[in-house]
Length: 510
Ligand code: SAH
Image (cartoon, rainbow, N blue to C red; front, side):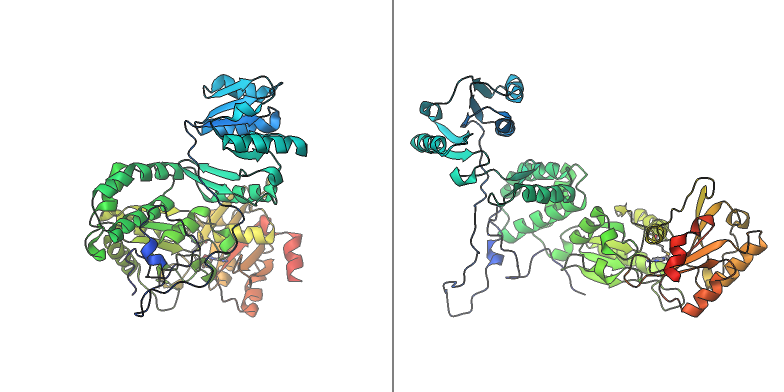
């Protein structure tokens, strides 16, 4: 088994990122040189960079805004938020600018047109100009003042541009298309917004606060890097949690010792892998996978989902397969405990939702009994995926007021003997049968004996959400024969009840 020690292998980075805020990662970013001594790197390391993103501390600096229409209002608000002194020049200021000025002590509005003197000591000038003449006048005045100039919506006349911003201060991301398509940049921003939970700002603040403390420990470059890697994993795994002092203690604990002893307790996340299609993973599941040191996965988990796990993570199959050789539940619990005790971030990846026929309780209890922190990330259960594929609602007013999930597989492969058949024979219910391919004939026959109509619709969905998904529609009488002829192999469930009757399903089969 590969042991991950928190360090990237030397020279293995693939990123083109050249900026390193920590200044500790550079050593591993260089390709190791052979013994013939230093050699210049001949190939170009960056493609042409159309603009350089800079992150400018404006607090206490002066910014002049030449123009006061609605278009300038947002810039006034943005710049005021940076703590700059913002002076706005315009004969008829927009109401929004006046509103910002009335609330922010660092915004001043001068109700007149700008003049060149207004830019003295300004580091940035943001202006409105429609005509080239005025743009040239602005450029000259800005140059005299030694200020950079942005003319709103006119990149061709500007020396710098504003990007779209994802704001999780002190974590700030700027996005630019170099004036090509601001709407495109905004859509990219919207994507990043969904990927990066708001709570990351707390972690970014903690990083700032902890940085001097880490530095004062006097650790070497590798130990410092390890701390920040651990920090990052924690932040990405639990972005919603406010970091506390005990997190700092766990980060620095033992980093200067050997990797195996470096952290006392890892964590375990029970993560729902959904029914197979990786698109059906939750964002939290993806984040957990990308932070994992070890992924313990069931047979039901699809390869495409596993592919999303951090590349360096160990991926261990702990499949529990009906009627085939399997890991015992005890083995799985023991393995989780021993990995977590090595300080690992363990993702226990379960098909569908971990809390539906997943024996999650036993795993949670085993971990809690020995004091290992455990949390659960829900997933899309197979029934939801099957209903979505069929385009049927599992509940329906007047027809199906009750929705029940049931397993048709007990120890020994038999139908469990403690099922509530009265509830299952309710003609106004939708029943979803998990783990019920083998026992389908017996299950359907029993439902009829318990009083359900022999013509009650029943549909089986095999490998819901996967590319080779199949549907088989029939009734309690006909479905077992249809399924037997079709040779169902993959995981499959059966939906029984009035809700399972839908013209679309019948069409799928014919
Ligand atoms: N926790 C899982 C269920 C695990 S029990 C969930 O929430 O979906 C295993 C059973 O789930 C299988 O026997 C089958 O009945 C059902 N199942 C799992 N994945 C499935 C899929 N992609 N399509 C149809 N049924 C599935």
